Amino acid sequence: MRVYVLNGPNLGRLGSRQVDVYGVTSYADLADMCADVGAELGLDVVVRQTDAEHELIGWLHAAADEGAAVVLNPAAWSHYSIAVRDACAMLRGPLVEVHISNIHAREEFRHHSVVSAVATGVICGLGVDGYRLALHHLAARPASQVS
Ligand code: DQA
Image (cartoon, rainbow, N blue to C red; front, side):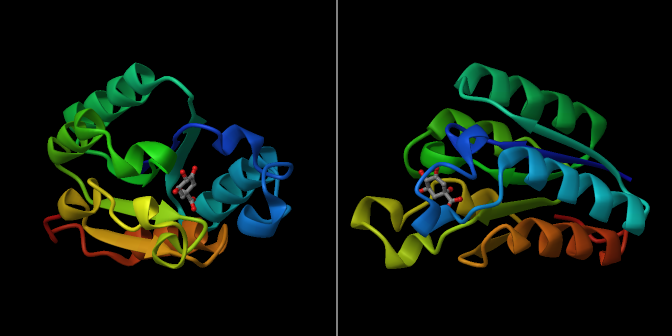
């Protein structure tokens, strides 16, 4: 099963960005971890990050066309991008929204994600482990289960 692990703006700076909030794992280490976990689980994992909204939307369109599963950390776009949400709503496979930090325990503007209502499930506050948990969920999820 193909799984796209897609990351929004500033996540490429993991490891040096607000380490008290996001931890010391670099983006490169996160990408390697997702590839390793995917290989263990027999998933075909593709990991990407972008700071350009149109690029993420293009990747979501491709995932929708393929019927692929998506693990998405929309980062700041979570809180205001109706365009990202609309692209997520087109997905035919399951969508797991991941946030490294607990967005509900942070500034009020982070409490709401416009993506969550169209996600299959949401993991937040568990650090980069959230990505591993999302991949385990997708690997264990019955193929017949609709999102
Ligand atoms: C984030 C939380 C967002 O509020 C923030 O804008 C991010 C990262 C997280 O993973 O905790 O860039 O999505």
